[in-house]
Structure formats: C-alpha cells, structure tokens
Length: 149
Image (cartoon, rainbow, N blue to C red; front, side):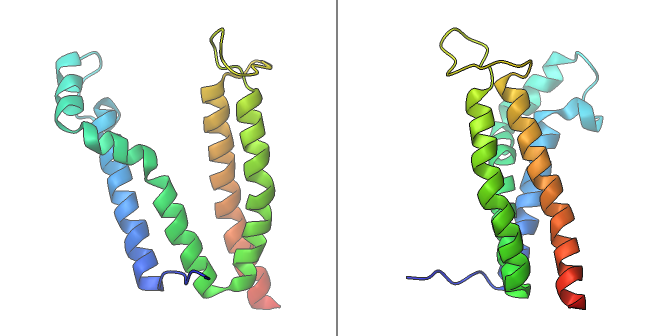
C-alpha cells in the first residue's frame, strides 16, 4: 500500500501548527530568552514550567511534524527535488546516528563513549542543526536547478 502525500493545504497547516507549538514551547520553556522573566528569577521560571510544561514537551517533538509537512509539500511540488533531498537524508541520518552513539554519554555506562571532546547532547544538537541547514539550503537550490532544466 502506497501512502499518498498530504495536500499542499494540509502540509501548510501541519507546518504552521508545528511552528506555533514549537515557538510557544520555547517561550514557556525559556522565558528569560523572551523577556518574560529576569535572570535568576526562579519563581517566574517555576510558574512557566508548572503551568505550561506540556508546551515545552510539544516544542521538543514539533520539528518532526514540521519536516513531514515540508517534505510532503516538496513531494507535491517536485518529485525530482524530493528525491534529491531523500538521497541526502538516506546517507546523512545513519551517519548522524552512528556519531551520536559513538559520542561520550558522560557516565560510566554511557554506551560506547568514544569521546573526542563532544558529549552526546552536543553531538545531537550539532547533527540536527547541520541536517536542517543542509535541508534548507538544498531545497531552494534543487528547485532552482530543476526549474531551469
């Protein structure tokens, strides 16, 4: 059974909702970054974490539906662009997972812990940021390439 991609309208809704929830989670998870709390005002931090903790959890998982909506939209626009991105993702994701597993987890029972100066959290952040940067650079370039061809 082959899954049909979302329509462009539904992809847009999915991306918009995930961006709004991601931003709301970031605001309530780190209110000092957005001027809602002064530095070291722990009562203010506790207020946001107690009353809006569910938004923080949303912000952790929202990049996944955003990426699914974006890729569905890209696939609807151009199969060639999607396949170019998919070739990149098929190679990048396993390499990133291997780097994460091999990075130092920080504890005595922290996986393989090959070290090298990066702990697991930094490796996760760096690989995710690189993935999103390459994705957001690759897509416009491929759209332009295939539009001119």
